[in-house]
Amino acid sequence: MNPFIVPISAREATEAARFGPKAANLAALGAATLPIPDGYCIGADAYRFQLQALGLEETARMVFSSDDGARARRHALAMKLGLMDRPIAPEILEPLLAAREALIEKTGALMVVRSSALVEDRFGSSFAGQFESFIGIESEEDFLTAVRSCWAALWSTRALRYMATHDADPADTAMALLVQPLVSARASGGGLSETADGGMLLSATWGLGSAIAQGEVTPDRYELTREGLLTHVAAGVKDHRVGCVHKAEPTTQVVPKGLVDKPCLEPAQAEELATLLRRTEKLMGMPVEIEWALDETGFKLLQARPLHMQAAEAPHDLWLHHPRLNGHPSGVGWGSGRARVVNCECELERVGPGDVLVTKSAGPALAQVLQRVAGVVSERGGSTSHLASLARERGIPMVLGVNHATSKIPDGAMIAVDGVAGIVRWMH
Image: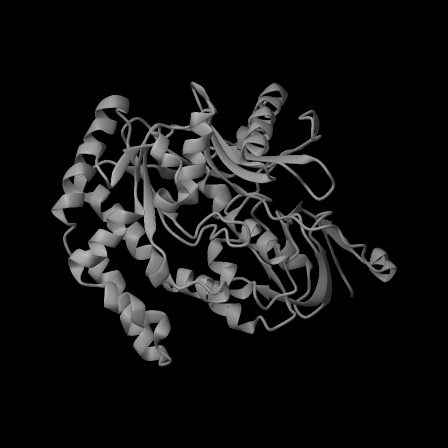
């Protein structure tokens, strides 16, 4: 067996220190007979070997050890350019291409390359949405570019900011990878095995799940008891989907009008998925957050990571007499502050300490403001998006899928966000 690359079905693939928690958790689910896609794990040793082959080990140390911000940025750029532009060492390249060919021959599907950093998917630092994933890869050239890009993502500005707030040095960690066939999903989504009110939650959208993860749609919401019984369904607004046809790169497609607010899952399917969620929680021994996809053969689990939850807080009575909007709760916290309505990322500098960010779409790029805001309200997104995961991790109250939030909530108004109940209120 190659020291750098192993099948996800191999016993070694469950070693988080070699293949990262994301890959190791998924391999453990497969070993427990839970449904996962086939694939290969590329170990952190491959990344380290590549750094050594390119002579980048000293440059890596200089990024966080330098007190000069401009010099640190130059070192980080050198890391990204080195990993992106220079050849992959033959000792890695040959088994990597062999694994790709074997997977194509076995499945006939397009490829997916996903990051599995050693610091990722841990309790207290999920890194949700901070690294890279590439889906629908066909050519060998694009495949190798995706591998290089995932390695280089460890040195992206977004990831470096996140690591700095968690006292993590990128030079002390490494990037492992997952290579899998693309699931031709009819529907996809996420799930929380525990909510603040003692239940479980599923989200769903048409097509591939990246539209939920990036906060681009308001997904369906399925509320269940801890025993997995469905109690409530709230249809989302799924006006577009990321989909694929046979052997074609996934594209954004308009959802037919009749499906925009039609639930993606039948009640029996939601309860079947809840069973998989409970089994995952039991296997990992803690509350979990999952990502899943549904194709013609059934459900596939794509990811499982620790779930960060906090107890609910009771709002002050004075807020109960003010206007309210409802949405999808992130699951933690209650906070208040001055509303800052932002329609573009270029306006984020307007958001000051203690403000509540009100925006149209809640993508992972907004993670940079979480450290200074009292809450977040978004017109799109759901409880299992990447940004919601990061907000739970930091204890930041967030409500997503709040229709017309940017037009109804006045900029500068005092606003309260209940991240447990999914309620937003503001003062006139």
